[in-house]
Image 1: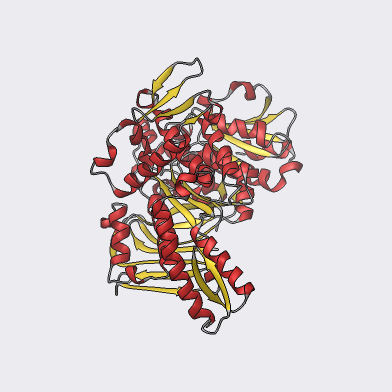
Image 2: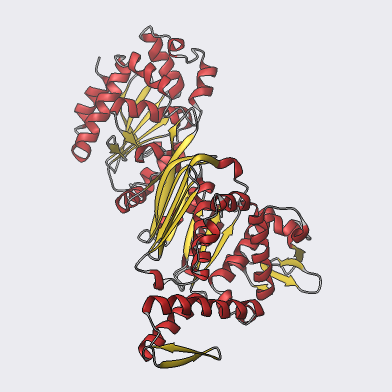
Length: 385
Length: 178
């Protein structure tokens, strides 16, 4: 369960979304799709920060919550006096009200069922990674830099990807020159930055998403890094303290050694329960991927192949996917590939003069109706408002 | 929410606006005549459906599989030889059809803040917002007693109600009624 409400933020006047495992949002230009996508991604990140520190105070300081969001995604102009954002999962619920700058967070009964995700936003301008060699030193926006840094990790891990999406084109990362290369079906090598716009858009996204859905679980380097160890140590202390308090373990007699330190529990069952929670918090369980316009510069059949690959890739770890698109090929392929697990949203205008929008969520019956009747949603919004 | 008739498939924005006005319902808007014909040929292969397209862009292959069953000055009603599918073609195109009907009823589109000259009217009718543009709705309201408008409305309503039980003679009467 994951519910997001946005009020009076950017073009969004009032929107409530019940997100599922695979989510697609469509809508006119400037109608708030990216605003919703970015806010959803930010809230997933905030949830992770709160869970991993068991502390919501960093977001409670006046307008800190909204300011981080606005800074990270360049959305300062979106904030209004009465902006309100609310986010709820099985583990916690938080809300931010800009009229009194209050941030309220409450744990829910599923607090300890949290499973650590890797949260990633894949921006539409991702093809810049192929074109800019020294991107890490440039004053780009934080969101893009974060994607570039993730992509850098992914390309170094994979080194080589053969025959991406059956296109007959392979990708290679050259460690020595720190460059990206491709090899065409006829064996001709080429720099990624010299390839077609479609390849420059597709390959960074593909390599990154392949890492998010598969590679990260095989990446021993990432698992054993110093930072990871330090974070686990800290998290162990925080979680034990919280857990200790919630279960009143002062008189526990069961001693369990975790990471070389002795911890006290009531019995073996409790100790094993704690270790399971610790594992859920320290080890990535799944990814939460927020993907902007995957269709960029892609030939329609390749868009369909990409969707099929995505649906298959997220299956193993039950990754959450939220896609904003302008492509009927992408939308229809999602409906075709996974109609049951799919949630479709579209933005629609509430106020023409002020250009204010809401978000409508299609129900299962409507998705079936669209598919059965070949309804092109991009031309038939009004029929579903 | 208005009712939806998703087996009624018009192309273009202003066609959709007109059909939705006449039926007071939402229909299955497709963005080109090839998409309309594609749905008839594939998705609704063995099912009842009505396509509405401009004559100037007719998909000839599909047209050859249909027989003409009724005709007015601007509208032709065709029926597929083997399927319960109907195609209405608008001659030469919907923009000219609307202007001619308005003229026949002594209605000036300018009274509704719409141009009366074809090329300017066409420009607006191609806009992506023309399917919800209330100026067109107001113009249709003023022209609604026009014979071709009325016949189009009556025959569409008849087809929607009777779909697989359509009597083609009755349909012809409604379509060509004076």
